[in-house]
Length: 441
Image (cartoon, rainbow, N blue to C red; front, side):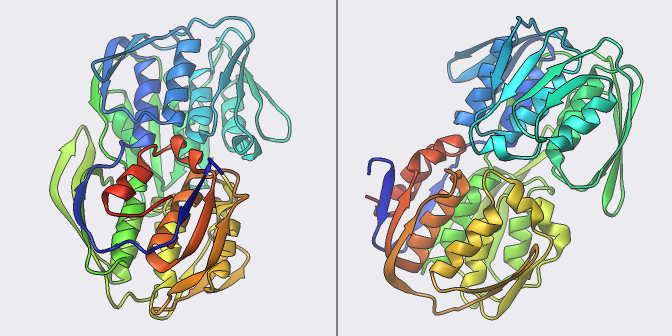
């Protein structure tokens, strides 16, 4: 099968320095905010994955000029609500929940109806967490079954809202913040802790935002109708992409890796905190600040005596995209690992919790599930020699990459379908594995 890979051997020892692709969350947010700025913004090191390129196509459909010149993206914005929207405009977000949900926040003043669609996977995901608060601004949103397609028709009579975001959804919080930009007055959001990239970009752009941080919630105020100027931005590396190499190195014998210039924002480094608690060898070097974001090189060494963890659920939102590979560490640990309140995993590109459990069971790892809680019974001697075929996972890029890491770490003969899925977020993933010495057919 041309869209299938085969892995028959564990990876050999390696000692390498690599650069992964740039941060998907920041790439999409930078594009959307550049579309609302006044003048030409320049975005360098943009992640050229399907999700991000769909964001570029989307703003072009809304009348924004965007050109790639010398590996930089130049985006000409006309200020807040500066879109030129034609009748019967349809935005295809592909597989990107970030794009589909955030762009709705920018369309709350649209004078024409815009339809948002997505692929089969995205069309199964819950959009009510975004459409319900956006309706409170006064905009008109139509959706069947709380999912895509969604049609939005804006209004010139927006009103600020008070909203409690209790799911820990950065996409929901960000959509509300973007809607608040076009709304007179001050919008208040009580938001459960989650990624704060949008807040940091607002601060960098000197937009009127006030944030008070509580133990479990942030209290955010955004005052609308304040224009802002174009900006230059260099997107740092993605920790979610780094996660696969962090785990592969930790599980491989006599290996070491340095992953350069990664965004280590505190709201994103749950995987590092969790793996350190499990006795994995990870350090951060060359720490810097870049326009509000923290960056660093991540250095990982092979880890012996990995221990089970009772994972604090307070870390869930900071590791939500990395749990698939965290489960692989737990599979090799001494003792049992417990993970709680994982319902958000099944609201991603695929029902990731369900799929991860099936994969773990298929490779002989004992697991016990109670609703959204999971216990993984580790086996430090886990070593596979059977045949495994990973398929029917809704072409979820992270499931594909998790499966590759499992094959290269634990052994066995693997067939993994839908290699094209990595184009969503990490097109060079397989090339980097081969750079480390992985043998992939």
